[in-house]
Image 1 (cartoon, helix red, strand yellow):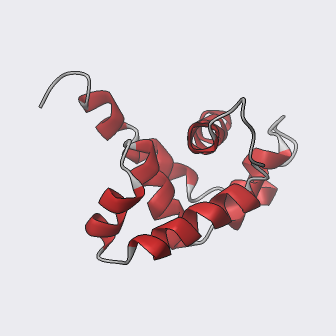
Image 2 (cartoon, one colour):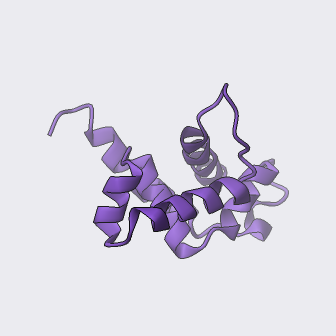
Amino acid sequence: MSHAVRPWRSLRRPIRACADTTPRSLAGQGVSQRDVSLAELTPREREVLALVAEGLSNKAIAERLFVAERAVETHVKQIFMKLRLDPSADTHRRVLAVLACLRAESAA
């Protein structure tokens, strides 16, 4: 495994750790509404987000979770909706979702 891949593997712990945050624990800590919305994610959506943070494609996530690729697409769409990440030509929503989670973890 190359050194370039290892840092992504280490992101899995923070992503999983932020899965335990609640809106109440984040409120009043200078955390944005997008970050508070992380608490609205289901356990499966948080699992998908952790795999997105590892840089996996929807197909690779589906194979890892033993689900259809369409199910992963649905989870990713729900993550974007709950984090209020609208489509834009100027941004990459998968990256923004991971950054929101990392910001929430660092604020906790």
